[in-house]
Image 1 (cartoon, helix red, strand yellow):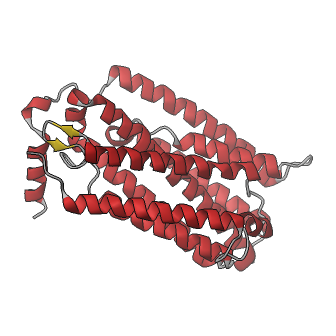
Image 2 (cartoon, rainbow, N blue to C red):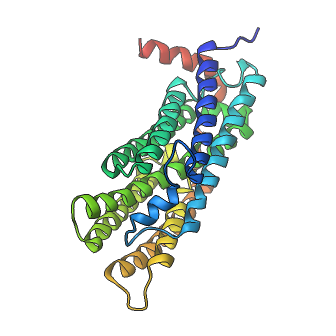
Length: 313
């Protein structure tokens, strides 16, 4: 008889509650309504940098929250659906307790950042944004571990769930992770300029340089080191292209500055790496598909889970 895992149900319920609270707080911050002093956009306008994106760029938050809401709907559906071993969300637990703990912490940091931003505490806001991005990476880590353990079984018996996990969870959180990483760099530019008294040009160049290095390092890692874990995560580059396009359109001038040129080159690099990434994924999907040499019948998900329990005792 199928049984629920109460601790995991509680973790999912907490993630839902934290998400709803975050949505309410975000809406209040956007309107500048109590307990906030100003709108988030007004604060942004007071701390202009040479890489601050155009206003339309920030509509990506709507996309992020739609993806996160979709993940919640998918996870909640698993409480009602069953497979051969029990309820989908826990038999096996592809997304473990750690995923939801990281998610709740992530949403708490998101809310805290809104208050720090509203109070113009930029160094503290930067620290919280970096932690926010890190919790996104942790969520992706747990998601990848889940598919590494149970992907062959899902591919054999529950292919729709496998692809929903890849599209909603992995790519959805990747959008969030990429945007918060870029937001951290914008916040870093503000801190370097307004708190560390670095020139606006040098502050922006520093952040653009960091983003460029991160982009190249990630392209190498995902394609040649972490392929078996992150092959189908494709949304990182579109987010970079979106953000850099916003920065270029807002800050471009008739007489291009150093950072105008840097931004244009970075945009071209992001487009090229995205094209290269798509080509490599298509090639590997056809020529080097996952799970070909694995037999899902050789080990059930529950046996895998039991072995993991013994390892971590």
